[in-house]
Image (tube, rainbow, N blue to C red):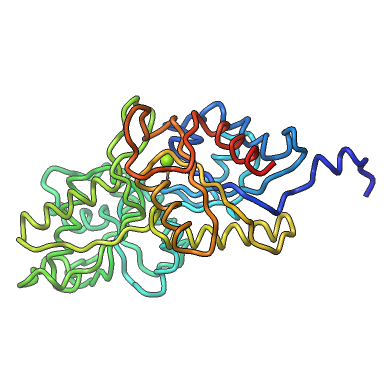
Length: 346
Ligand code: G3P
Ligand code: MG
């Protein structure tokens, strides 16, 4: 080692604590980086008065592309390298369902992106709403495929196909068509399109990659998200069939996502910083009380891990309102959150 004591000081990595960041409303808004995010990352990477580096991960409910692709994009936005080893998005845990369901309908996202993500997760037979419309254009009376969509879609006889599960990977680009197709499957016998179950209890299960009713995009006010589609679908199923629909959501605030994040952080600290013990505290920085703060607080209370919730004012949470779930601290932005955590640890 040829570094001077000062340099060695600068690069010392703390094993005491770590941070986890939400993305939309904390680091990014509508595809644009929140300016303080760049300085927040530099601070954690060693540009701070304490002369330490702090390990961190990213836990977003968003999705729609591969983890690899998303990290390339995030690296550019944050002007520093972000690796898939420190990144979880809403659909990452769906990977674990690839063994259980063979033929699956994948909904949401741009073009063929989510089909590619699902195939990358190991799903054997991935169907999209476009495939179904290509097979039978009468499925969606007011929606026609564009030439490109028609080319990319894979026709087959859906009268002979059983769809085992429905996964909403990313935000639907066409609620009406997607909901029609999901509803058809839910009301079918064993996921066979064109059939109707007598009691509407033979359809495939539906999984959403998260449950955010609203999220923080480029508009000044929050925009409706996947959780809104879920509410809408459940209400529509009830209106059409008279029955309750049970659906499942991944992502924050589900404790499974925080367990997943704990394992990811453990592996990340081990692989990149050679730290083999768990951190004493993980500071989670989020903008959505219902997902980020709720999940962090519940995980802190129910697990052996010490997670500390920090709410920022740059996203879903609006100053002057009462958050439904109380954070341990509220700060203006992500840089304030990083400074808060470091000051507590100093
Ligand atoms: O669609 C994404 C959004 O609902 C939330 O993303 O990064 O705030 O968890 P994030
Ligand atoms: Mg957010």
